[in-house]
Image (tube, rainbow, N blue to C red; front, top):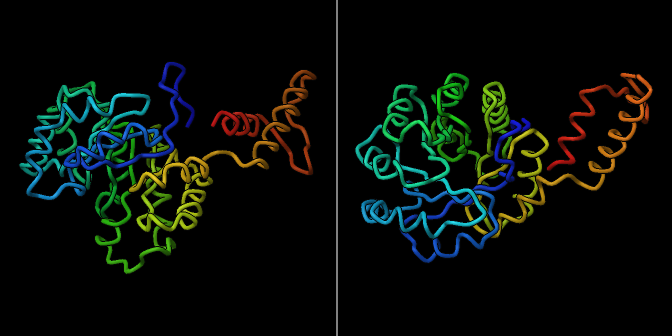
Length: 279
């Protein structure tokens, strides 16, 4: 959806996850080119390093300073580790906090109470229960984005698929629709076969065409591929430029509907074309 007039209009095509326990990766994260860096306290950190990773949170946040947005993914907030993560995150200066396995409105409200009202929440929809309740969760106060997590979702529904994404079509559309109905951002799931850049390109392109704002990345090499996939193709850009030109000329004549290449165009096509050109 188009941003509000006073919104931050930086691109949000790629979310690169960086383990908070690896100071080497954190130090290099800012030069990886991602639009959003997600400092990870959850799956990327071994249980034995959870406490030390949390204790280094502010140093890690300072290392991520730069052009990219910096978000923090905590452990599930309904557990003791997640609550401690929230307390440490409060006032740490992250642009958003990512709540994994979002399912409960009460848990999300409690997390917001700990963090304060100024920190946006991005909810990871990655279970059957979370997907079923996505429309209600997306409308909660403080929630500004949904992030699809395919691996845990597959586990929760018993899917045996790995790289064929046919089993994800319905839930992807449901999560995207929930986000758009609430007027918030939405990111697609990562492509875990990080050496398979062609597979990533196809997956990211499908997400871009469907309407997602961007896609999660599990490896720095995936970032430029995601950015390319979300950029308009030469054909799309040429179409959009012709639509803008035709509609602006029609508007100058007081005409609302015009024909271009056998297709009837109206105001909605002009908005679509301008949005495409703005990416």
